Length: 205
Image (cartoon, rainbow, N blue to C red):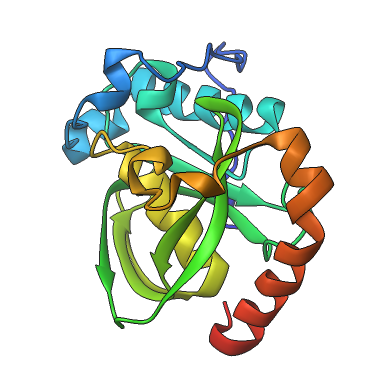
């Protein structure tokens, strides 16, 4: 992790856990606003990024996007480190994405179970591209451009969808796959973990 991507908490700003907006809140259906580098460098934006990271960690999420905490800004963060909610997901270092764009690099997709902090207690299957290019700025306005594969590619697609007003439930093509979290754990988790490991073996990270 680049030291510049670590939560700052400076300038007298103590990091805060923000309220997560839930399904039905209009902000989740809003297309987020692109930022200029000047706006990104503003102390209030940097403090907000710290709060966004803190909120993701407090909720034990794999990622979170600004609209999920009520801000229509094109900012998302991802951090996966042996996450107990998603034990099959490969680790991803804490990364801040500003104005991200995602480009599929293959037509190959896989059906994966997804959940969302803004749709609590529900999981469902979504088809995600298994190889994508990610272009964005980091929190300092530096260019990011890299390829992601497998479940990690799916994670980025999920988070960046939020910046277009799209939720994972919009992409569930078979509603019979919708499940409460408890029933996913009881009836589907073991089989899906095997699928997830096979996806990673096939497509990598």
